[in-house]
Image (cartoon, rainbow, N blue to C red):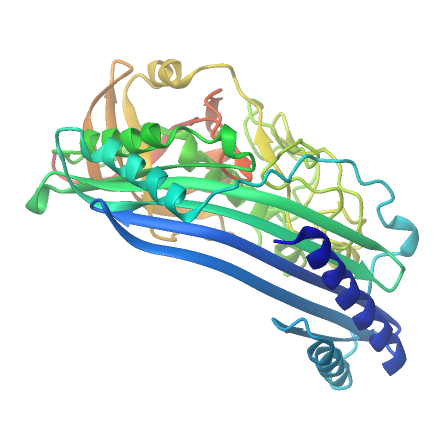
Amino acid sequence: MDIDTDKQTLINCVQQALSEAQRLGACQAEVAASTDEGLVATVRKADVETVEFTKNHGFGITLYKGKSKGSSGTSDLSSDSVKRAVAAAWDIAQHTSEDSYAGLADAELMAQEFPDLDLFHPWQLQPQEAIEVALTCEASGTALPGIENSEGATVASGIGLRVYGNSHGFMNTNLGTSHSISCALIAGEGDGMQRDYWSTRHRVPGLLEDAAQVGRKAAERAIARLNPKKVPTGQYNVVYAAPLAGGLIGHILSAIAGGNLYRQSSFLLDKLDQKVADSCLSVFEKPHIPQGISSAACDGDGLPTQAKHFVDEGLLTSYMLSTYSARRLGMRSTANAGGARNVRTSTTGEDFFDLLKKLDRGVLVTELMGQGVNIVTGDYSRGAAGFWIENGEIQYPIQEFTVAGNLANIYQNIRAVGNDLDLRGNIQTGSILIEGLTVAGGPA
């Protein structure tokens, strides 16, 4: 990617679109243009499956005729295409109903400071090098006794450039990188086969886990699942392993998202300043972490992001609102257009093995299946696999069971959050211990 050239191209697109929207008569407009470039190499069973170079462009405009909104987009950044996209958005705005809550955030609220968040760390990765890294990753895993097959290893490296501007005269540029290595392996044969995977992700290539270590972890996880048993149906204490625990926190974020709140489709409706979880749990965002997975100086509306708690020692202290959803609720934006950024949880200090000792007897969940979560009612039921814990230690793998409850109760019954943070995603938490979940299994 030619950063300077591509950046100027995007800026020109945004400026052209805003000028064209004004010429057509739009009272307000906002535009986002982006370019992404990447290299992906995948190998399977020591053979190269794919090597792909990608370069994608995106352009989107939203404009307003009074309180009527029109939106349009294209993947063609040429001047003629941008002009047609603006015209299409303007045409749509002629036919949409007025929405009294629509429009840009107030001009005086736009972000003014843009700290360097250290998000750009390109990997000068050539195709042959990417192939060799992927082969090393897979070979390290398949070398372990018990691994019988491979679903492959993938190495990916990408650069993303985005420019956002609006008719207030606001413009911001984001440039970042993302790199990853992943591997999925199969242990055992026939009906006894078990699959698992591992991955590493970071903005800085030098901070990725070693490729051979990724392959070994994938292999060890698959082998550990061999010869599973079933767990009898009952009420058990349950630990969600860190790579899955982020999903539990994600359900909180969904329930406090402005769209669900103003549609009255959330089990946390009207729960602001009330206790919604055990006091051991705090959930907060830190959008300015250097090199953070989702760090950003401003949100999708152009408002400055800020560190904040959503849940503070069990108390719901903030919703997650964009400008539009805040207006619908009669509140102020929390600068969360586009979601929360670098979400983290508090920890009660235990490492993973201490958390299992605290669990003593119950279930460790390491895989979840299905989509049985109702954000409106809080009802929760997911297919799962994991391990049976006795005397604080892993005894044997278990599968074909369901964990169920209601999220309102689940959060109140959290008893510990480990310090084994999984930092690979936007929601970063340690393993979570929950008291008294219903586990539906079968005869052991």
